[in-house]
Image 1 (cartoon, rainbow, N blue to C red):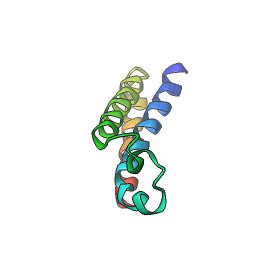
Image 2: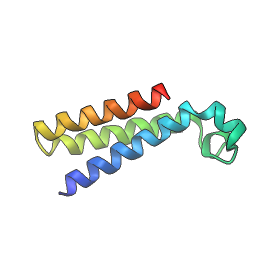
Image 3: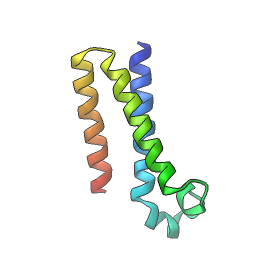
Length: 86
């Protein structure tokens, strides 16, 4: 159960910085207080958080077995594709 909770947490928290990176230009106009436009977080830091958290999520998913890992990879790919298409 703990691996499942950590998988969901890290995959979700890994996709949030990706959303911030994709929306950075619009956020400079509409939400300048957000982390990237305000300078609280650099683009490199956001990318690092995305990679590290996503990797941790997939590592925890792998500990739950092949079906759980495969499902988590699909969820991760779906989330990143969705964010890239918005």
